Amino acid sequence: MTAVRGALERLMNRIWYGGHWLAWPLLPFSLLVRWEISRRRRRAPAKGATLEGVLVIVVGGITVGGTGKTPVLLALGQWLQQQGYRVGVVSRGYRGACGRGPHWVTRADSAAWAGDEPLMIQRALSVPVVVGRDRAAALALLIERCQPDVVLSDDGLQHYALPRDIEIAVLDHDRGLGNGWLLPAGPLREPALKLGSVDWVLERNSDDVDRGFVYHVRGVRNLISQQVLSWSDCRATWAKQKLTAITGLGQPEQFFAMLAEQGFSVEGRALPDHEPLAQHDLDNIDSEIVLITAKDAAKLSDVTASAAWARVWIVEIEARLPPALLTMLKTRLPQPASD
Image (cartoon, rainbow, N blue to C red; front, side):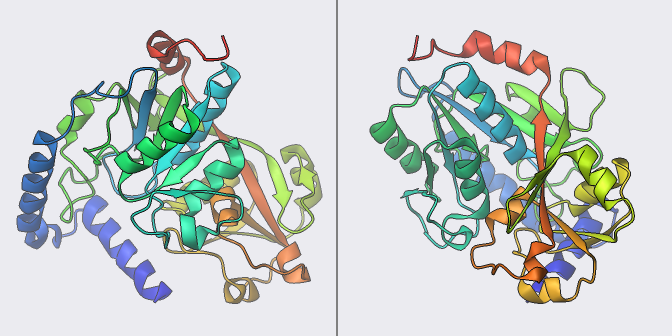
């Protein structure tokens, strides 16, 4: 099943970004998607129709696949906490088994139950996180229990029933909008005109000082021992060792390229998006060092303290956001409750 998913993802990427002829037969289905989007938009609450005292910021995208939305949300959450705000997060909990929800995420949850991204967010920020397909219900529960100053929505631009005050769209500069068509003929989840109505557009790896953001590597942490190494220590320690990077990111090439840019010679292995690393994957790797992302680590709940898993190190990264975005947010944010 994993191999089939991987093959399908590669095919769709060729269709969307490689000018493949199979996009044309899919175009009639895209017209149906456009009609459904228009219908939902007409029923959506106006921007700003949130409860007084709570600011809702949606960090989402208009393309399918990884663009860096969750790292951006984590960076925003950390910055908001530094400013003194009480932060909460709502998310769909993609591929989680908890269903429509809303479900309150705890550290005891597994990624299979709550979703890998919500679990990673809860662990990284230590803030209330509520998941469910009905994000409006998740938001209502979060506000009722926690009275946050700011709620961040992990994705959700297309969840039109979710009230919001600020919309931030995240794109990948290198991929752009692909062929510019709606699903399934193209990668767009809604028309590109949406970018004209959001409050800010961020582009990963863009040279635009106001829109561009990049990843910064803080270091690595061993999956079993929790030993932490700085990036410079990694270079010195692993210079002559064989390294393999394996990940279930939407765009694994970004992870592999980042490691290469840091001077590492790494064999890259891509799992399907959101697919967890399994024992058989590890058994097929003979490298002394195996590198994964924090998102991959969130999906691992039953690893054993064996020599095989002790080879696994988590690359810890953070998104560095443009100052212009933070300046804009300061003009829109309420006074922190702690003030």
